[in-house]
Length: 169
Image 1 (cartoon, rainbow, N blue to C red):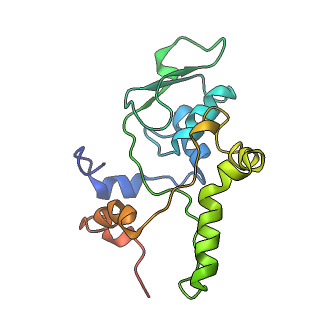
Image 2: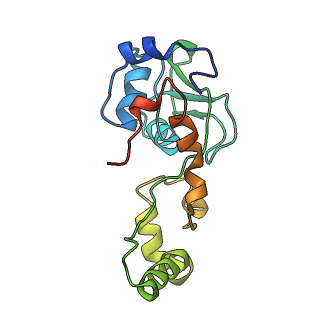
Image 3: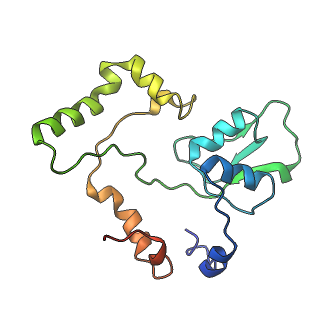
C-alpha cells in the first residue's frame, strides 16, 4: 500500500514510531505525534465510541465497519478528524493446531470452532464482545487455508520489504 502510493520506504522506516499497539497507533496519530498510523479497523470505531478520538471519517469505505463516527459533543474542527485512507483484509486472529495432532481430534476441534456461534451463542457473544460492540452479529469463525496468507507473502516478495518479513529457520 505504501509502495503503491509512492512513499519512500527507506524514509518511512527511518522515521517510523512503534507505538506499541493498534490503539496507541491511532491515538498517536490523533494527538498529532504521527502523520499516519496503522490500526485494526474495529479499534478505530471503538476509540471513537469511547470518546478517545472525536471523529472518524471513512473515506476508504467497505471493510467490516463502514461509515463515519462522531462522538457526542465532538469538536467540529476538521483538523481533529482521523480519516481512513485504505482498508484491506488480512487473515486475522487464526486459531492454529500442530500438524502432528491426531486428524480426528483436529477435525473435531475445527468443527466445534466453526459451529460455536450456532451451538453456544451466549459464550460466543462473550468472546466476541471484546472486539467490537457494534459488530457482534458479523463475527464468526471461518476456515482458513494457506491461500488466505498469499497477500502477506506477496508483500514480503517486494524487494524493499523483504527484510521485515519473518523467514523460516
